[in-house]
Length: 108
Image 1 (tube, rainbow, N blue to C red):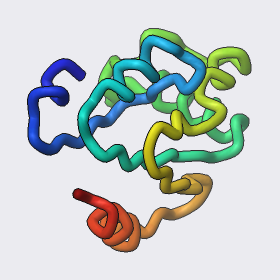
Image 2: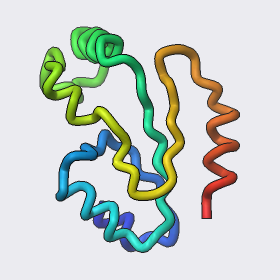
Image 3: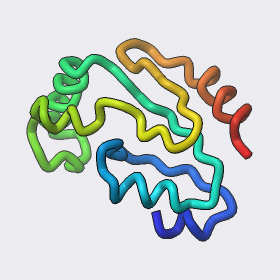
Image 4: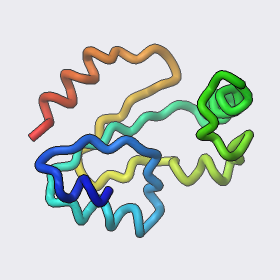
C-alpha cells in the first residue's frame, strides 16, 4: 500500500478486513478516489472454495491455513466502504466485461 500512495493511479488487490482500524486508516490515507469491488458469496461456499484451493497440489501455496473458520470468514463480512462500492456476487459466473465497464465508469 505504500507504493499506492505514491502512484497517480493504482489498483489494489487484497482481502482487506473492514473491521481493521489499521487497514481502514491506510486506505483512507490515500489521496485518491476509492472504488471498491466487494466480492461476495455465501460463507459456506467461500469456505468450501478456499479448502479446495488449499488442498489442490497444483495451486500456488499462498494458503497458510488448510481451512477457514467461521470467525476468520467473518473478518470479511462486509465491504470496507471508504469509497464507492460495487458489490459482486461471485456465487455464480461473473460477467467480467460488465464489471470492467462499471469500474471504468467510476475510474478517475
